[in-house]
Image (cartoon, rainbow, N blue to C red; front, side, top):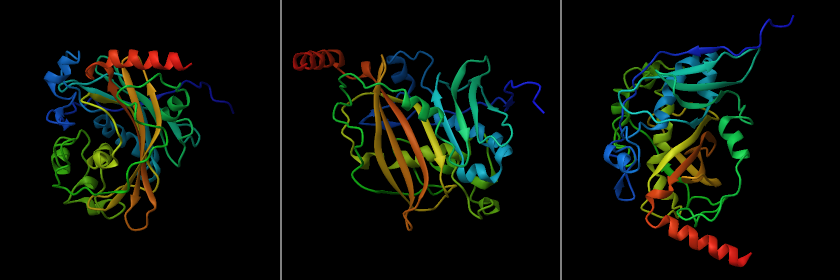
Length: 320
């Protein structure tokens, strides 16, 4: 029998107030876009934005309700960031109700007034062919002559495997100047499965790393990749996909990270490098998770950008 309607319906999570934890973030010897004064200099008058993957946590309870333990083991959240959130604003997560065994659904997060924060997809069982990030990457056009990212190439890999782990009280470095326990004090969706005291109550008998902290684990050793980007310049996350292959990832577990540039692109205001980071089990070398990050650099934050770009375009025209 045919369904009466095919209108998508959404599961709505509660409004939450995410916290800013990157006000003191540093990279390349300078503060980041998450610092209020730096953000204002770049034209973001509301102040330093909360990092995008912070909002991933609000989707986890909804997706666990839909797909159970399988969400933590093979789940993928793929998002394009639309508008920034500053501390004090409230955000709600929404997930499309799946139908008849559907393994991919649309998601979005919005502010209390309906302003979109992010849009994307969530899926399980490796259903990523039409994920938000995969779809956007398939539509990319070759960029013009890049300035900040001119020394990068698609297919370029990091200098080697990077050894990482996340312990509860481990400071996660200048990119993420806090520990897991400090994050757990402020996370919008706390769970005993994340904690030292009750992590053993999880289905895997161990504490698991929250989805938003997978991004932190990937960032912990990113300087070791040695990708030749120029600076100083300010960047922000424009899109991100985190997928469990054989998850979840565990607190206190050793992993190896393997990085590869899978795309280069540009918009009117940014140059972007799309990097795939694969999380390997340190002993077996088997993949456990994967992240694709669209890291967008603000063109106007690089001194002399327009002059250099004009010179490159002139050189390219002369060679044509």
